Amino acid sequence: MVSIIIPALNAEKYIKECLKGVFAQTYHNFEVVVFDNGSTDQTLKIVQNEFPEVKIFHSPKNLFVGGAMDYALKNIKTGEHILLLCSDVILDSHFLAEGIKILDRRTGIGVIQGKILKFDLKSNKKTNIIDTTGFEFHRSRRIINRGHGQVD
Image (tube, rainbow, N blue to C red; front, side, top):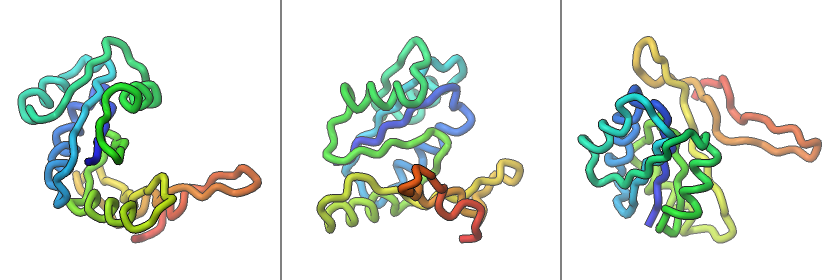
């Protein structure tokens, strides 16, 4: 099982599409936890009313993304695999299936990163411009955002 943990803070603009992408997955063995980080907008109502299968944890104060993920990893998740998902990300419908294939096929892999394409907020559509395919870590301690700005 995959535990999908989504920290959210005032994410009413994105959370619905994010969760639609999660529930459109071709791989179905997952649980979803939205960690509300002290939202003051309609984020919680949207999740409660439109996605009743989602587990919700509400923090009265903002623990920030790192604090929310840390708390969720220690106290909420139950799956063998964990997907830490930002509330403004829309997954491709095959993301989990492809990720699980990689994790099941190769031992020793601790983390996988999907390709993230930029989203055009004006047209409300994804583009073919890569935001990231992950990070390259160099001995010099330099970190490079692999693929950033390139055409897919």
